[in-house]
Amino acid sequence: MKKILYLQPVLQERLWGGNRLAEYRYDLPSDHTGECWGVSAYPSSCCTVRGGIYDGRRLDELWKNEPELFGGEEITEDFPLLIKIIDAQEDLSIQVHPDDEYAKEHENGACGKTECWYVLDAAEGATIVIGHHAKTKEELEEMIRDGKFRELIREIPVKAGDFFQIEPGTVHAIKAGTLVLETQESSDVTYRLYDYDRLQNGKKRPLHIEKSLDVIRTPFEPKEIRPVTCSMKGAKLTKYFDCRFYTVYKLEVDGTAEAVPLSGMFHTMSVIEGEGYIDGCRVEKGDHLILTAGYGSMKTWGRFTAIVARV
Ligand code: ZN
Image (cartoon, rainbow, N blue to C red):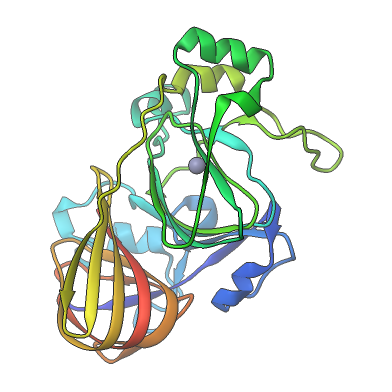
């Protein structure tokens, strides 16, 4: 069964957000819009289908009642992925996520969070935080208790087109001036380690120091990314990373490609640049789609770039 589901994204206001998500043709609730949840079945912020025979239906409900769209008997209880575009006008808090085992035990059976970032844009001189410099758990604890966050965090330069895998237990933060497409486990469990002593409505946001200390992996070891590109006439498919939660690719279409392969289960697709067609269906920058299970291969035409994920 070959179907393309167009999703209606959910926009989220954030303390650190801006207005750049308008570049993706979204209606922003305010000038502090931090996140577009483009593919989400997360209960409080679930996407609905736009157009076609499933028009208006929620993704979480389709997952339960039309499982054959996604892979039939092979699918898990809950929709497993969450795809966001994040606009950091200001720094995000320095944070860490638990793994599935820890979250299950300490967060009422929730999932942990493994995530990855494709950098859409970054201002001149922009940086991000991935990892820390403490060599032992004792050193980590001491630096956190003494508030030595500047010395603790590993901050690195970032530019458009970079890709990062953030394992659970990794200290991380997207910083000001960066636009990121995030592919992650469908979870919202975040432990805030440091928030630059900022105020929201006159109050500091809560920190989660004890839980952070429980889950931060020490010492930090960076994940190496080795992109592999497969070129065909009219398209290029680059595989960035493969883990037990997702595989993430970039699809670059330029001209006509007769048969771009899509194997197995359903795929998500987020168009990040340009416009074109997939099997006759028009797609443009800012669209988030699901290509149903068993799609096989697609004929693409136009000039566009998309981030594609599958479980
Ligand atoms: Zn995160």
